[in-house]
Amino acid sequence: MKQYDKADDLLYAGSSDPADLLKWAMDKFHPDIALACSFSPEDIVIADLMLNIRKDARIFAIDTGRLNEETYECAEAMTNQLGMTMEWYFPAQEDVEALECAKGLFSFRKSLDARHECCRIRKVEPLARALSGMNAWITGLRRDQSVTRTDLKSVERDDAHGGIVKINPLLDWKVSDVWVYINEHKLPYNRLHDEGYPSIGCAPCTRPVKHGEHPRTGRWWWETPEDKECGLHVKNWNI
Image (cartoon, rainbow, N blue to C red):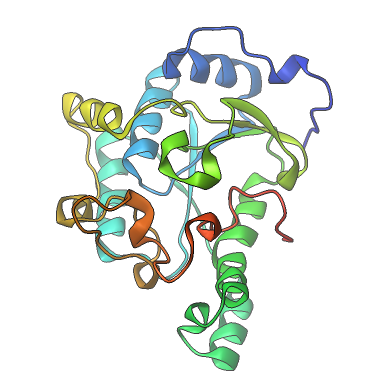
């Protein structure tokens, strides 16, 4: 894993088109670059763009053990339609067993620290393994998704993961842009989106939102907006 202390590898002088940014990133870092896919519409758009650039593009996903059935269906449809191989990562079995035996199945609803503990075991630690040996990774983050994402850059250094490069190609897209691409290219998507779920994570931590509510309202609805990250995209979590 390479740490990027110099600005050269963090400077992108191309167009704002996500395909151009992805080509630059993949030309520069492949095979040590991959998309972290949670099967959001954004991730499916990026996967399609990446595979159009090179068929051996790397894409990985984390199976937390608490995903909705619809998410697994989407994963299967995506891999079949795009003709790709998904790299799967899972939480450490002993850590999940210890958590559930000691604190039950819904400890994450008792406090912010308890929720962070569950996310650390089920998401953050598997992500660290997935990124081991990587020089860069790609996400589907957009600025208007959350108050915690407004200061992101399209290309940035990720100090939380050893200083590797983090690429956010859809950062300035609106949700309407994402769905236009999905529909125009007839890509699969999680059918929960048609049932009022704009943002989908683990099943016990996700619910549909009401008309007019912020899309992230349905994620960890018992917490304040500034706390609504799982640890994959914040800088101060201990892995």
